[in-house]
Every structure is written in structure tokens, then in C-alpha cells.
Image 1 (cartoon, rainbow, N blue to C red):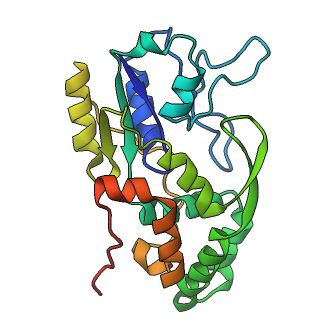
Image 2 (image 1 turned 90 degrees about the vertical axis):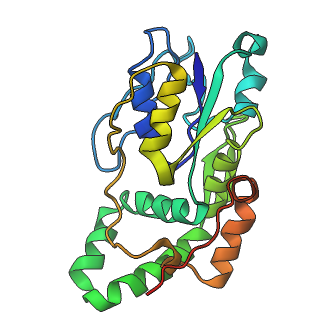
Image 3 (image 1 turned 60 degrees about the horizontal axis):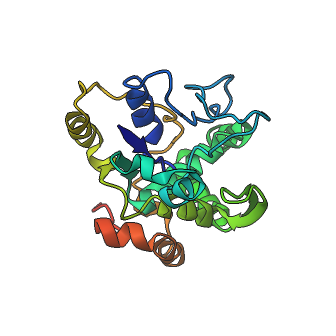
Length: 239
């Protein structure tokens, strides 16, 4: 018996799909969004629709929101609560490339129109502009549209999964090892995790290369609970 909470860009879909294989047909699974530039779902939602065809829960629902909506939260007192975590500066870069995959023309322009030595300088500038672009997202709490900067949105969703109710976290940095341990706790056979929703990053620069001092500080302010709980730091790669 477990509940899995999935933050953004932490390999949560890979873990969710693997755990889903261990569940009965009565499981509630929010599924994963259709992949950029592809048709269909990696894995579909299960038992997550109301009679009106609306979603019961968003795929990135955190513990506080979940338990506030349960008619009998005490029913789940003996369930193991599991979530994920990842270095926030690294996660935001991954989120940037995932969003870039929604714009194939832009991606092609990087490589078709720019010289190799110019590509990363262009991407770094674009990344720092994208961080503060304001977009309207549907609120997880009340379904209303709310405006967030790009880095604020992933910060709000991922910070919501840092909760004292969560029993175990799987670190992106030690993904397979931590997943195997969760399988041991659940009494199920571990499996090799598939790489889902990956492969969008077109340059291999270290995450720290993307940031200015200002944008580095922005991420630090957006992920205070994650950084404090797991001791994440902004590590520059030695060149």
C-alpha cells in the first residue's frame, strides 16, 4: 500500500510507470501528459475521471492537496508515501529543454543557423529570458488560471512534494539505487527503470553553465524546502 507523489523533471514518470505495474486494476493513476511532438500517452490515467469526465487529481498533486480532498484521509494512515527529488538548478534546466521540445522550429534553428561555438551562448541567453516569462497555468487547488514565471511554476509544484508526511524520497542522482530500495520496502521485485520523457536536451553543458548570479539566486529562493531538506548546492563543474 503506497501513494506516489510526482514532482516535475525528477524522472517521476519512469518511477510511476514501474510502480504501476505492481498495482491492481483498482489503482488510481493520474497518468503522464502526452509527449511533445508525439501522439498518445506514455501511460494513460486510470480511475482518475469523475462522472463529468473531469480529472480527479492533477498529475503533480502534492500531499497537502491530496489529503484535503479525501473524504476519509484516515483510511490511508498505514500507506507508505513516496516522492522524488532532484537538484533544483538541474531540474529547471531539464524543464527548459522539455519546453523547448514543444517548439521544434526553434530547436532546429539552433543547429541549422548557428555555428557550433555560438550555440550555447544563444541557449544560455534564451534560458535566462525563459525563466522569467509569465504564463498562465491552471491552479491545482481551484482550477483557475494563475500567472507564474517559468521557474516559479516548477518551484511551486516541486516544493509541494516536500512534506513531513512523505516517508521516502527517491533522489534523481541515485535513481535506480533508491528505486530498488523502495521496491524492497514494498516487498516487490525491482526492475530496470525506463527512460521516459528524456532525450530533449541537445547540448551537454553542465547545468551550472546556464545560470547568471541573478538566475542562480532566483532558483534558490524558489526551492527553499528542497534545498534545506536535501542539502543541494549549486555545483560548478571544474573546467
